[in-house]
Image (cartoon, rainbow, N blue to C red; front, side, top):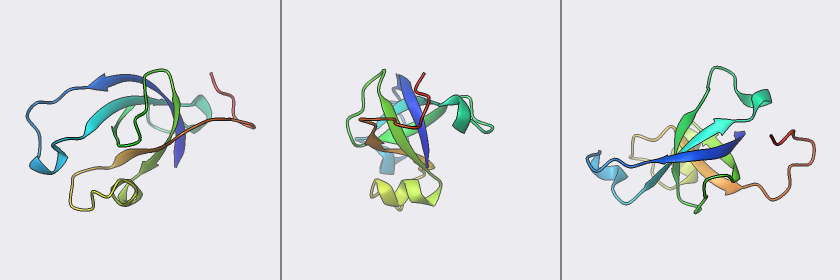
Length: 90
């Protein structure tokens, strides 16, 4: 799981039928959690908004975390950060 900031959204009118009804957000991982990612697209079912810091599950945990086991999802926003004690929120 990583922490990142929501920096935008993605609208896709044509998509896999298992993704219909889902919202997609662009998340920029915090610098200390970037790894090889500069930005990722994550499915959002917690109602995150642009500018908020969020918890993002990756891989199979993302599908389980947002109850989409049969959907092509590899990143999901599973929480909104209230307090980042110990993190450098930038």
